[in-house]
Length: 309
Image (tube, rainbow, N blue to C red):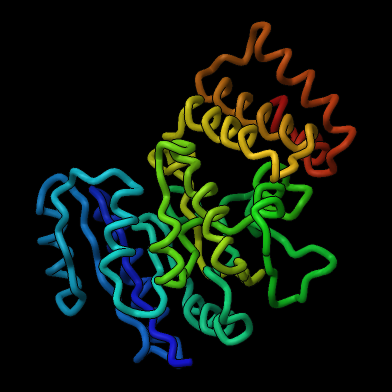
């Protein structure tokens, strides 16, 4: 099959990050043997046209569309997916960095599992300055039954398990996905489902139209900073996600996985608000210590003082 990919880079008010992100995408295209099959477009959702004007100056050959700054995150996603005319689409974030091997990895995944609805690569963490985080590691790992160069997720149940508990191997960053255009138009994310965690519910819906194929090889650097999704998500978001899980009994989520996720998110929000004292904090930590009996990853976090520090 003659695969063609449109790579949309979604930008919004972050010029310094965006310049580096766009250049990294162009470098990855140039490094790919199939570069003639890749089209790069910038979709700017900044509130003023200033960012678009500067991007036009630095990247005059790249198509740029100004959206007006009124779109919410998933609305922006839907619009570029619907405007795509190629067989596949990448929707990349303006604060992340694509590695030179990304498109090469994606085309390898396409050749190995062309019926998949989406393809993703592993990634590494960097901080807001672009420095590798000291605890830098792959976002996800293969399990024993996976080929070393391909991980296939065929059910929403298997995907959700990976999101809830790192014992099951973890998951790729949302920014690294390349979607079948036909599939992504059928399963668009809806923020009403699980707030900022609706990317996960969207992927669970997407699996209905084909499995997810992941490369354990890193194809991107994911930037961790205060304005990132994890930094701005709220208690309401993760509670909506947990509510969605409870409403879907077919996911067959174990109480251990459910409570590990619930308590880790609660611990994160309590700590981010400097509420590291009081009954809620101590109940949360006590419950996590109890659950660590059942979770290797959780024990490792405790031993590394990520929970009780």
